[in-house]
Image (cartoon, rainbow, N blue to C red; front, side, top):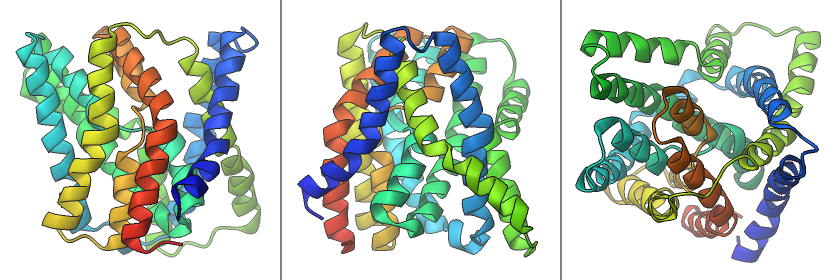
Length: 315
């Protein structure tokens, strides 16, 4: 697909983010309202959407170790680079871990799943869910472990326990696991339940995008030089490293590679800020990275999807 076609298709998604941002900036949507909308999407609508996708897939359709190896390799390369740059600036381990998190964790749940399924096709659901699983299981656990060790608040065992608890409490992981169990055991879903999930899941796309925009309205663009560097890592280096790993090292299926690289091109995820704010580690830096990367991604996401569409022979 040509760049202009991709851009026009992504525009409605970013327009919804802009609408949420405007509602937040004008005060029509208060920070409290934005927080509750985000909670609704996170715990209910998005979970219903993920469950619905997973329940119609098999574990074999999602779990591809070559795919996981390629994605992890690209992520780790950029993650280590971001950490080394942070250490060169004499930042402590906890801050370096959050900067690295900004460099590789994209908004796959709230933005990637609804957008990539529409832009690339329903078959993109499986690879996108696998990217989301790696992000949540591997990197969300890793940042908790590094934070615990960096602060000296516990040993390796305490860090591991906290990481496991963070994963099992995440509704996206729970809904994905339940959906795969339903699919794996071929459990029939009653028509009223399917209709319920369909109606609730349909709220995920507009709700998630509006919530992203509303939450961005409270973000500040401080520490611009660091935020610009992390934006470059997330929007350029991350998809580039993943593309090299997928296409030149691991020989991932072209379609799956296209989805993987597109997911890697997404802006910094909002849940990185939630963690940073919760632990009191560089929240302004993370906030600025989310704000800048989301604004710049309006152009860069279209460029990346147009490029990988040509490589994968998509329409």
